[in-house]
Image (cartoon, rainbow, N blue to C red; front, side):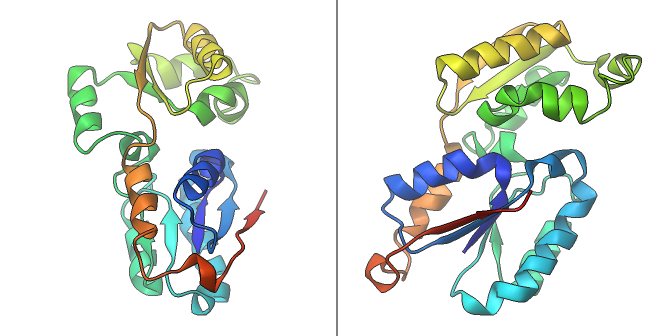
Length: 208
């Protein structure tokens, strides 16, 4: 089973297909938890309590994601594994690359395909900036640039990234990141003891 952030839905579905993993149950928690990381672990525990015994192996489609190590405690409790890194920007890159980008410019705001596409909803609406424009400076006064870590890098997502950078009034740098460590992690599942012949269907559920 993979229990993941909804922001990874497209990437995980693609990676499962590319690696021929048809015997995986995938469920997603709402991507809006990006703005409320204190709720992530409670929801993970709730779901894992109900289903952990039904699966040979469980992967949490989260990095640390602002939980200050609590996701690692969840993994220990339920014998689960999580993605490498501190957050999605980290696991979409090769090991150490995010740290290098931060050292180069600490005042960097990062985008992925998902965050670029849903920028207004997750950032300007989710953080209350549309209702309270005075919050803009509180959140963004210290940023110097936007770095877009492109997964698919379509014309639509590139346009969205340009729009997001424009709303922030910052220069944009684009990195063709691909799937990074996320791709490596899913590829490793295809070499595990699971056999597609044992369970020939993949189910997907999304929690709003």
